[in-house]
Length: 495
Image 1 (cartoon, rainbow, N blue to C red):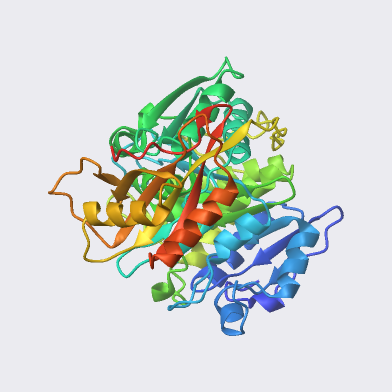
Image 2: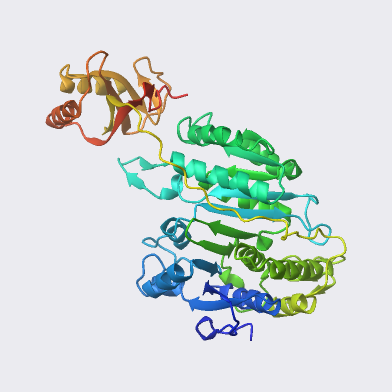
């Protein structure tokens, strides 16, 4: 099989009991490294029935907004297993993220990215690094719900659910237990985002109590990221929200030696996807110099996932031996350390030549001891006593002052509800605001109903109708609820 075999022409050999797998050959360097990865996997004895699909740039250009044509979806749903090379999203607006679409549409909630150093054969300042980043894959800011509300302000909604938190946190602890890991660290920014990140940390603390044999701790994301970059040997398994996990895993992969060596899995209840961490690198496509290691290590994770652990270990040992022997692609080649600079095909050949051999110094994987992880489905909790107690009305008003806007809002409300606060970009500016606060044209005006009177949605309708009659340009509202007497909203003091 040539390294340049077209995706559509690829056919895996017929092997009894082979596992069907959908394979996307990708864009840029994707076809080169996917062909190389499959060569190595099949040579090692992987039992795979490959179903090639075309997704990414070609599908985008053919009018598929998600980059995934119907026949590709059919294959992915049929096999429940996707091995994907990097893809290219065309420049310009209107194109959805293919990765986000796949992860969310298929319920692939758990993204796992092992980040190991291979010193002294791959350059790194952290020779004993062995960290696994486990990232929530479906929620957070990656919901992609954004709106422009005024001339000056846009918003992005951060959505975090209790079931989503519990699924990923339990997965992290189950991963640690299944792979002999000693500690799970949670990263959040719950000192600022007390409700969204606060929920993630609360669930983490609850779940950690169910795993007394595994240590647990929590760090604020900013100092946590700094510590991870400076002293990664202090960490073992890190679990965090979607955006933080995306950033952290790239940092961790890069400081381990090269983001080009990073593999990942995306696991859900009904399927799985395996892909390299790096992108499609179109600037070196077709030159035969790309490193297939990140995709190969993802393929090894896939082999473990489908129960072909002996093959996974045999292949991983051969790869480690190749790295140890100094057979390196240009991205990790170093004079005085590397023995030979090779291209994509020669690297694949070198790994195949070393099947049956083991590294002398690099740590051997032990896939036989790992246990399968069954994704957890959280039970539904009883509904809380939910009560409406107020409303935040967001207003577009340029060239005004907090006192003037507050007076307009109070006059329009005509005593229907009490205006208790006005904020601008989350900072309270009325009453008792500070004159130095920079103001935009986007305001939040909070109305509340003093106890014991009951606030109703009919009152919301009356209030909004009154504001409309007064010519006030409200652009959004958020109802304020209590749940079992606890406020389900930030207090809005602009800490």
